[in-house]
Amino acid sequence: MQWNELYDRDHEPTESQVKEFVNTPLFDNLDSFMRQTYNVKPKLAHSNCSMDNGFWKGWNVKYKKNGKALCTLYPKQGYLLLLIPIGAREMNEAELLMPTCTEHVQEVFEQGGNADRRSLGVEVRDENVMRDVKSLVEIRAKTK
Image (cartoon, rainbow, N blue to C red):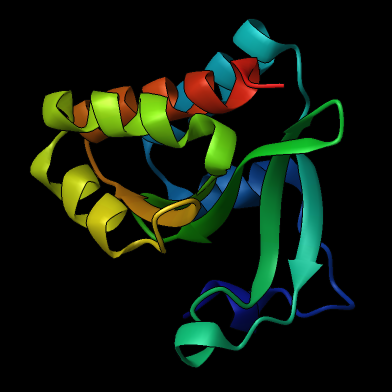
């Protein structure tokens, strides 16, 4: 069953239900990193986005610092789908990071938008991609 079928707009899931659905230690890895590194708590939000046949629709977990989205988690069974915005101010540093990233992250970056901003929809299925995600979030967090 899909996430957005389990929890519609009127039935907000708990943090433990998100963790149980995703069912991967990568969730704890990301959550601990965000809390400890940036002192942010996750916030649940509902999206009605029908982009990609509703792939982004439903409850998601936002990590924000000072009103700025660092990343948004869309729960998927067995893995994480993270949306990481890369703005104009972060673009140069993100481009410099890309040669050190996994092939998956490099492909997502190339397909993620235009020359001055990107929205990266990264599937996190292993620790190598998680490392790349943390590096991108670090770039995002330190840019003012």
